[in-house]
Length: 321
Image (cartoon, rainbow, N blue to C red):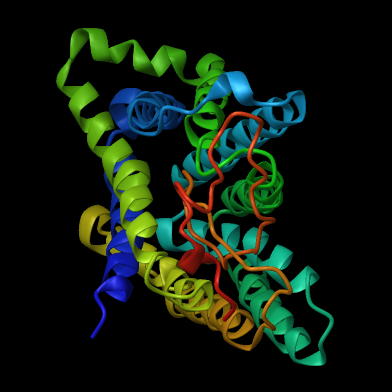
């Protein structure tokens, strides 16, 4: 049996347990302070690992990478703010609708209407019967995170057509750091008095961004993106488990039912979705949660750079499913 699915599962677990660990730092660093440190540390590490060739980038690539960074910042800031009052599993379930909507919009089949209705029913359950542990304001913040998640998916596809390989990752994360700076700077000052908090923030960066980046990069060499998408659909369930084990968050029957419906819809649209005409690829990127993978255009190498198919994106990654 291939180890690639296990790598994706490890990535899912790492992301959601990283979110839970980050939540434990909110009292000391603030929700936005955790986001700022995570983005900044991740940008620094990935810049060393990836070393993008910035001199070869066209102006359109810079613009797209900056917009992607804004989307990443919005996704993580709204998710963190929602997590202050809403259980982690519910936040991930609601924000998961952004990437799922993008995947559904790209199809024109009646079967996909079923998946949309299932996902909509799951969120409707949360809105109509949220329970005392799920305030509507927190659900609204999670929904805004989902909007940013949809923008992140679309912009990732745009960046993928302009920048070879994964060179946009450190740039987009640097932009996300600048966006989060005015919101998280006050909380980050606590690191001066308690330097150990920096180690905690570093562990969040490793769990939520760097480890998943490496694991998914390895997995996508061995499995089709459709299989990747099915496994990524387990993120809401993994978030609920992480919330239970790390944060002692117990979800009620309604929240669990909503989680199951959204997870089923995400897996369904991934399983039954038609293969794209051009070879799909998924760029592992910093995020609060993984969504159904959306095919992106093949990278067009800039003048003087190597073709991405020979370097960071081997041909077998882009096979049809």
